[in-house]
Amino acid sequence: MRDIIDDFREMSRIFLAFFADLCYNVRMFSNESMNINAQGHLTFGGADCVELAEEFHTPLYVFDEAHIRTMMRTYRQALEDFYEGNGRILYASKAFCTSAMFRIAEEEGLGADVVSGGELFTALHAGFPADRLCMHGNNKLPGEISAALEAGVSRIVIDAFSEMDLLEEEAARRGMVQNVLLRINPGVEAHTHAYVQTATPDSKFGFSVANGEADRAVRELKAHPHLAFRGLHCHIGSQIFEKQSFVLAAEKCVAFMGHIREQYGLVCDELDLGGGFGIRYTKADPALTASDYRAFLEALCVSVKKNCRALDLKTPFLYLEPGRSIVGEAGITLYTVGAIKEIPGIRKYLAIDGGMFDNPRYCLYGSQYTAVLVSRAAESPVEKVAIAGKCCESGDLIGVDFDLPAAEQGDVLAILSTGAYNYSMASNYNRNLIPPVVLVREGKAELIVRPQTYDDLVSHDVIPPRLGRE
Ligand code: LLP
Image (cartoon, rainbow, N blue to C red; front, side, top):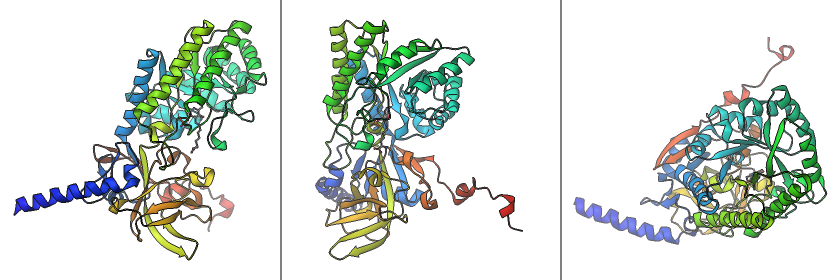
């Protein structure tokens, strides 16, 4: 009898695996994080997502640790292979900033970039070494500058003239010299959403090479004795797939390195080319594997070395700052379907227990996502639905074009590729609670951000005595 049961189990496993192959929503994601188990449930990082939803409730952010580590190693190895290890990968922590992430980045030998006092504090709280931190920001506050110097961050990227003076003053007060990079705007229009382009002529970031501001910044920096110029920084934008845009930016940076050596006798020891590599959200996006990301780095490294050789410049120490491509596909969000509304001739809405407070990216950028019905992940889609959040706002949607099997109230949905810029942009809008985060390793999930409570929400409220109750 037991044999028959085992045979039956094996047959259903093969049968389901076959169906899994048909389910494009899962199959289209070529990463290793996702699968469908014998029960037909979506698994992520080896954990059954139905069980995750039962144990931790929804909405829930889920991260696959193996995917994060693989991406970090891919980048490190590429720098080793194509640049003789003469550089450092800085994880752009804005993509997903929690203490546990800094622990992983440190274990993997990465540095990190931080853009605010809060990100800096989180890194230090996690025990991340300050000498592997690089501080960004287009308007660093005096308190942030002083916290960065106090901590001893390795590099500060200067983004404004006023900041140069603030930093000089603070470094002088402390009797120290701070290593800095200058953020330049090389004027490269990357093909991506306008809100995440950062090197167009009309950008709040960096000193423009084209209008002479970058030259002026170099000249002024020389007059600040407590700031040591180490090199240049540029970041052209985010969610970019064209290798050519990155290479063009790198070429322009190296050309500017040559220009400032000639013009001002200043040597650039370092070059930071930012982040921005795209990931897959839907089948319309290319499916990049680790070797594609390696190829991005190879193209950049080859270009920098070649152009430096041509100008007789020393090959600079290279920084890269990937964020989204490290954590984006490593994360999904689980939701439970609540109200279902069909508007005849228009569309069907599935309302979920999350929304713009845990993922504002559709509202902000019209970002597209892919959904999977977690308990019947192998089933083929039968309808197109909109997924609506629970906020009091018509625009509160995760998207309007999801292909799904017929979902019912109580079903758990997974939205894929939510690892980057979802948790980090979450809010308490409508006093909804920001979902907890679990990290899955070999099928076992652990909380890395515990659930908020309503008490947390009111814990910062103050009632002035004159409004107090008797
Ligand atoms: N370095 C700098 C200076 C940056 O400004 C950024 C991203 C990165 C690195 C990392 O770029 P990544 O590799 O993650 O593309 N909230 C938007 C994305 C904003 C990106 C901001 N800067 C979104 O949800 O798409």
